[in-house]
Image (cartoon, rainbow over all chains, first blue to last red; front, side, top):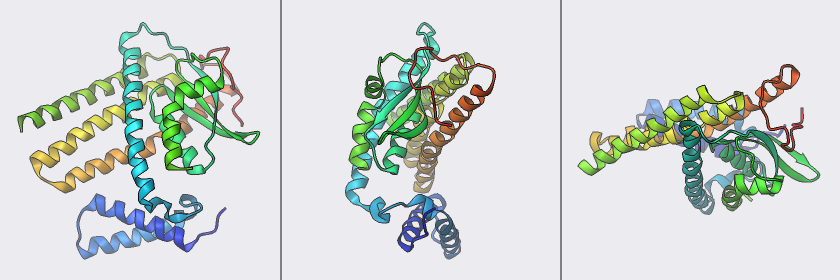
Length: 172
Length: 117
């Protein structure tokens, strides 16, 4: 387990405080003091799980802009997959052909893997079940509702082609 | 103003359409994992469209910035927390299935079913 570092606690504290202010949206002294106490306690307990490596990378403007750009790519994929799933449910003619595929990925960092597998899970039709490291490469085990590709690489291109490009721009 | 009102209504109806697709999918699909796949429609486009409609309504008709921001935060929270829950549920369903009855209808010639214990 990682040690608790001051910079990690500070970064987590700032993030918690911003969320607190956004949720309460009141600037009276009582609310702010309560927010500081709650955020400080949360940051002390959870910063060692939350911030690995450079703690200030969350506040790097270039990263934030590439994250916003990634959200557009993600939204496009999301709409495509949702329409496909709606056709599958309402139409009934398309057969379901489920299976679990092993997809190799180039991502290295923990954050990148988490963002990529969360994006895959949020897309209807694919759920990431496990992340495993096999012979120096990270592999995702993905449950896919319509297995059409022949190999893991082809399946990876169909499942996460656009998503991985966008994720690598954000975390790499 | 009437155009924004129409846009809000269309967004909420589209969100309800995809939420209904997810709910019907839960009833129609053959096994646990496929049901979870269909139900992912609900927190993604279902919630997102309704949330965007709500943000527009709060911003343009109620004129309250705080309500709009609260709806945005709710939508983001659902987007961030939902995949973690479904990931753990899927893994648990797979492991419970391996122990006994073979209720998952998986394709027999898929690759990589040996998820690490």
